[in-house]
Length: 509
Image (cartoon, rainbow, N blue to C red; front, side):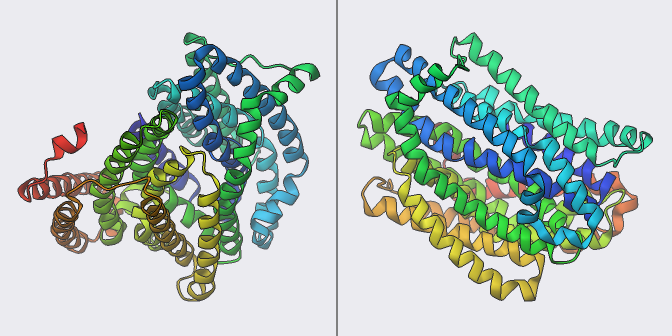
């Protein structure tokens, strides 16, 4: 399901790139879309989920389902009230939010105004998606993983329809065509919430929201709600630190060449394919089970699950990082090089994508390592590490942006992610929470040998074809890239098998 959501996400970005290219208007949309996403990750799937899921899993394991259902009702009531207030404030303060996120958009006054309008349209999306995060936490705790993984497809479908059908229609009405994307985002949020609500209703777990003041006071006084709010404090700070870094980078990019925000965004979407397939999917599955293991005081199971997750991270993310570093131009060209997307834009997106490639392993590993702390209801340690990494990232920006321009912004985050992951790993090892199982040395050598062979093949494939010049032969380019990727998968996994790795045993474990 995660694979399907990322495929439709790439189709969405392909259509947006070919319809709108990389310009002041696409910069305006990307800034406006990042604002609700920022708050969604703060109050929804970020700080809230990190605090909510461990408490929910512990309640289910220790007190049973009836008490846990009441906890869900109380938490949902408090969250709904907070989201209502936040949405109103966000719509009223959209101008200030856009200025804080990307004041450089004022270089193009029309783009700046468009960004403000779209922020107002899309801000209620935060409320829908934060409630979706609550529903996903409940479903994942009950080991119903499919629906939460599939619902992002609905957002992508709505945005595909907006770019394909909505933009031409808006143009005939005399409106800015890119406004259609904002409408698609809002509709996608409504549909995702509706589908999750139905899934929860089938399990009799749908929250019963209290809209009276007395219901809010009762929900606020619940012990579980207070525990979640207590844990959310440091978690909120930790997620905020990550997004402060993104906010600073967006601000810097808005002052660079027009299109810089869009180049980074297109690279980001491509990078999210492996991070979601590997890191997000693993994190979603591991988080409630790690929390359950901790609630049951099963240290061996907790350590074994972390070990399994980290091995999958290594065996799957390292070859992906190799591909982003040595085969980026064909990937960008086959996905984005159509319509309004120019040869120059492809090269700029490629440079940004290579920066992400440097830190891909760290970005994926964080999705496994951070839940190791959250499952212990320790949200403070990741925060301290994140603050240090934020400082490191901005120091790197100071030195690298004058040299690499927009590509420095992804490179600095990539390096920061590697430092962050290593720091968290060492912390788990030091406290004895994670004890690596035997065989890591041979396992690492097997992966590195297979990746070396893969890198040689991809460098040959990258240099043997002028991928940008094949723009007029789109289908030929697609088939060539598909053949290269199929061959890459075969080369890598055959090399692992020849080196003695028992892949079936690893996956089944």
